[in-house]
Image 1: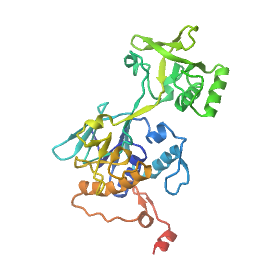
Image 2 (image 1 turned 90 degrees about the vertical axis):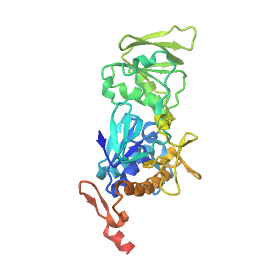
Image 3 (image 1 turned 180 degrees about the vertical axis):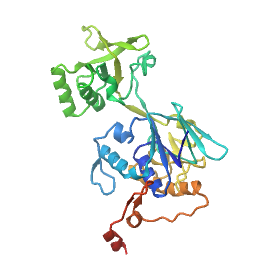
Image 4 (image 1 turned 90 degrees about the horizontal axis):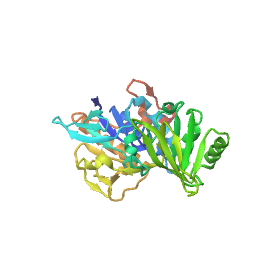
Length: 353
């Protein structure tokens, strides 16, 4: 059982910034995310996409924003359960909550904060009747550890940046990489398309365009795929493989959280925005794009604001008999749990005085 002060569902920008705001209040956080790395959509879908509405940054890449947030929360030693989806929420007799993931990992906290963006991201699966038979037995919908594919025969399906980038990366890891796309044109960055084409000319990637995976074959594990070509005069290709990775993107869904007894409106969680962003379940908050209220703006900076307000009220739940006096970080600095402290600069304090 993992115990913490604040359990955060979702490790996107809003969830990560919550760690910082909670840390200033000396509250420990643990985050759960279904994705294999922190950052949510910013890391998984568009790490190279520029964002223009983050204060003090005229422009910042989504991936760089996540890197900066991770650096900002280092002093507060947050825990992470990654690659697991929050499945159930149970309230104990002592008033605390237990959240269990789809892999059985249990987490206990007096405060639960849902910061899941647009919800949990579930992979878009190709319509193959027996694909579930091979999940974790050769079929995967995202790449967590590239070394798993060392010296393996890998086939990737998709036409976006993820499919192209991973095909290029695995060309130096796997013994054989095949990229299958149903069109001739790819949706990814031009530079990636050119690199993949060059690797195909060098024989480091097998490129199948205007084609799609039709069948999966194997017993206890995946052994082969059948590629169907759009050209009716061309016979299907039988390809022996160790791994099949369809990279068709992720579909945002509220997922199991929708069954927790929360008040839902248009696939979002209703909260009390006039006070603390608490849901209809006392002790459970929702911040960021996952929540809804009158006047809601689905912006990262809105999530940051909601995180700051929410943490003040979470502190009162966790420490009902203590009074907290807020100090500006420009004066008090930032002190981590290990006792290290970033002091405010002298000239800043003088300018305030």
